[in-house]
Each structure stands twice: as structure tokens, then as C-alpha cells.
Image (tube, rainbow over all chains, first blue to last red; front, side, top):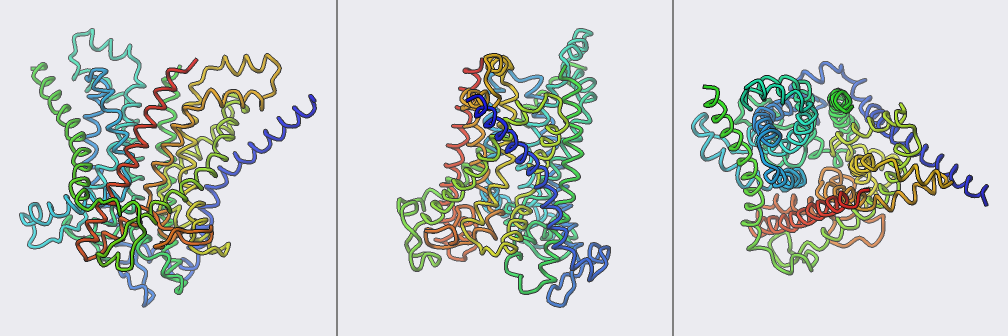
Length: 298
Length: 279
């Protein structure tokens, strides 16, 4: 009987160990298989040429990723510029000013915002942001804009990354020892002075880490951006031009292009690029955030 | 002077918070306002009819059932993987083990990988294995997407559990495997929260199922058949030039939003219940 129990325990232990190794390997397997799928196109052409050329004519064999890389970059940048002030202000408010009831009320708000599926954000974007840009904002700056623009993508993305930013920043602010803020307050500083001189200064690395994490989320967001960005393979020259981010490129073309091996490989290269950037960004910011958590835990 | 600054910034902060709240209301409001007129009982009870994509009768039952099948399948897979793993890193490995922090770190990174990358990887894997776009392909890919979500939230709740219960069980002579079986019962509400969160993410994601699950007007009867999903159904209907079809996209968006709202609130309910039961 005892032997059976011990055997069961041992079997469970090895099974769990196997699952643990599997999760670590999964990351490697995804990276490697994307890399090998992207290898043919990198053999055919110089990687630098692929990344810096703006010619996207798959049927002639020209694969220049620059328009897509720039679109991804612009859209994410706009999203961060819009989302960051809102998120910092709101998380400071929730952390240092708001009463317990207000905080409890805001928790489900943030939860819901992060729970709404990308497609719904896309629907909302096409219904409200796109016409707003086409009819009201763009005519003041340019002659014509369809509304399906880099700006629209940026605005929708901003709303999507706000909950992520807020939930991480509230954690970061909370990790600051209460003694520190109390000391500042008892010296006669106002709350805002304490926020400015103590909390923000102490949590700058956490804010940067949260921003990098949100940026990598923005890079990979597909459906919502695809629905509002316009998707033309040209370099956007202003925020009122259509853009075509990398994830949208994959989503629109992959699956149908298996008859052309070099096209498929080129799309896999874009997936691999996304993967590498996201893993790097995520790794760095998660590492920083873990350090912060550990520093204040004990 | 400093009190003026204090007041100004307080007002700005409250405005920022109000705008965020307003945007949430605006999103839900827009979806309901545009979708409600087209939302009929037929939408949720009928399959797409002959001329559905030209504005004729039918509903999106195919997408609702397809989404349900995919989420149930992927949920089963990811529960089978994440529950043992969370137990392993919390109760089998020593508290400061390098292996457990490696697993947590790789989960953090898996959590951040965009769904389109999972979709592309899943499709490449399916080609390698010789599977076409089908229910099983969708299930496997969505399982990869929701596994890290489930594991992270379940892990966070498990870490809150006090060490007294495991210690008491071990001192009674239980093996670790027997101990985990008891602890799991204690952690049930936390597991339910994690599952609901994972369902919410999995059911709303379109980029993972875009290549892997395919699309069909019928309800799949075997794992090898393609399956429609709700987000893709919204996306395709919205792309139609016919206005009635577009309106039905908004109505389908209501269905998806309501599912998400229910999931989100019940997750909240279960997690509050959990904090009450905590020893």
C-alpha cells in the first residue's frame, strides 16, 4: 500500500517535471520553427535589403518590409503617446488619491477594458474613430483622408493598452514603501509634491518597464488595427495616410499564399521578426518588474 | 502656490480617470446602439441561410457553436497542462528554485506573444503534421494562447495560499501528491477565476483561429471539419458591402460583448468568494 502511494507520487512528480520542461521548450520550438520557415527568403535575399527596401511586389519577387515595419512603429508610437499620460495620471489617482470605494469601482472598469476582444475594438473604431478622422480631424490638415489611417490605428490601440499600463503601474506604485511617502508628507509636502518627488522618481524604472511591455503588446495587436488602418503597402508619410502593420500583413495574406514558397517564407519572416522583438521587449521589462517586486517584498 | 498646483493636478487626474471610464461606456454603448435593431432571436438560433451574406435570413449559430467547441477543447487541454504545472512550481519545487523561476519567466514571455504569431506557428505546425484548417487545429492553437493566461492567474492565487495547510498535510504523513489533491479543493474558486479569464481571452481572439480553424456555415460534426468562430464571423460580415449584413455584424458584436461581460463579472464574483474562504 505504501509502495503504491509512493509510486503514484513519483509518477505525478515526473509527469509534472515533463510539463514544466515542455513549457520552457515551447518558446524555443516556436522561435526555431518560425526561423527555419523564414530561412529560404533570407537565403535568397540579403536580410538588410529585405528590411530596408520599400518595394512590396510579391508576384515579382520583391519583398521590402520597410512600409510594414514603419507602419507598426508609427501606430505603436501614437498609441503610447496617447495612452501614457492617461495611464500615469489615472494610476497615480487610484494609488494616492482615490478612496477605497472609487478604487473598487475602477477595478472592474479596467478588467472590462482589457477583456473586450480586439474585434469589438475594431468595430468601435470603424464606427466612431474612422469617421471622426475622415470628417472632422483630417480636413483641417490634409485635403483628403479616408479615415482608415495610422492615426485611427494608434487611437484604437491606445485604448487597448491603457488597461495593461494601469494595472502594472498601480502595482509598481504600490510597491513603494509607505514609510517613504509618509516621511515626505510629514515634512509638510503636499500629496502632489510627494507624488512628483518621491513616487514618480522611485518608480521610474517600473514605468519604463510597463511602457516597453505595452509597446510590445501594441506591436503584435492584429485584428483591431487591421480593421481601421487601411492596409496599403506604402510608407505612410503622415498620420493621415493609410498604414499596413506587420501583424495585419500576416493576417491578410497568410494561408492563401502557400502556392508561392518565397511569399510564404517572407510572411514567416515577418512573424519571426514580431516574435523576436516581442520576446526581447517582454523579457527585459518582465525582468525589471520582477526585480522591483523582489526589492520591496521583504 | 503649492496648494494651487495640488488642486490643478487633482482635477487633471480625475478627468483622466473619467475619460477612461467614458471610453468604456462609449465602446459598449456604440456596439449596443448599432447592434440592437438587428438583434433578433433568429441571430442566435439559426444557421446562415442561402443568401445570408447578401442580406437574406439566417443567424450566426454556426459561429456561436464553433466558438464554444473550440473554447471547450482548448480549455480541457490547458487545464490538463496548467493545473499540474502550477502545483509543481508551488509545492514540489523549493521556494527559491531556479527551475520554477525559469518556468515563470518563460510563461511571462509566452503570455506576451501576439496571437497572430501563435496563429502563424499553429498553421505551420498543422502543415507539417498534414492537418487542414479544422476544429482540432483551432483547438490546439487557442490552447497555446490561453495556457499562459490561465497558468499565470492560477499561479498568482496559489501563491497567496498560506503554507500552514500544506505543512499540516505533510506532517500527517500524506505524500505530496495526496497533499496537492486536498489543496486543489481549497483553490477551486481561484481555478474558476483563472478559467473564466482564459475563456474570455480565447473566445474573443480572431487572429489565432483565422488560419487554423477555417470558416464554415455549418456546425462541425468531427474534429477534422472547419469551424466558424464568433470574432471571425463579425469580421467577415463587417467586410460585406450590404448594409443588412453589416448591421448583423454589429448584432453579433453584441452577442460577443455580452458573453465577455458575463465572464468578466462572474470571474470577479468567484475571486471575491475566494478571498473570503482563504484560511
